[in-house]
Image 1 (cartoon, rainbow, N blue to C red):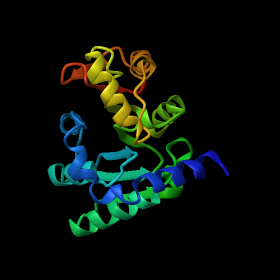
Image 2: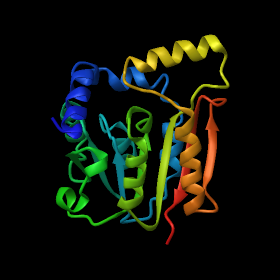
Image 3: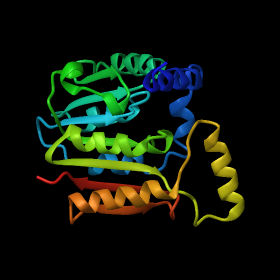
Length: 218
């Protein structure tokens, strides 16, 4: 079994039932998502892609607030995309949001959507779930046009939290395949600053999470 197929099966097994309550429960601890979405550049006609879109909650929010952009989302879990597709149709946004099942690392936007590159790609609490997160981050750079935006919001490693809170949170997140690690934020910042001297990195909720936004070098 290929790594991509195995990842899809694992995510399907994990979220087959959770997907029905995912948005209602995650809003309590996936902090900073809306702040990132509100900061994304969204000129009329811009192409924006969420890598690891889950239930499409973020894409639907963007579609409602940014009516002149074209939105795309991919996810490795067919089960999550079934929920996402139903949500998009229920909101009557299926003409504005396109979805596709694919791992990030091998995603082909031309085959999936007829798009060569995006103006903006973003990760929302996804990289800490991917074992080879560096490969996914580098693929994001390839998917955005030169001068385009890459944005990330994700868990910090909790090293600045109390020992009790850190142990409790990391144990809880591990149940869902989420593993915040110090090298993720550190190496992402290095990658970002190598591309963009004006890269923006900020902490969310007292070092609980971080947001990062930068431009791909032209």
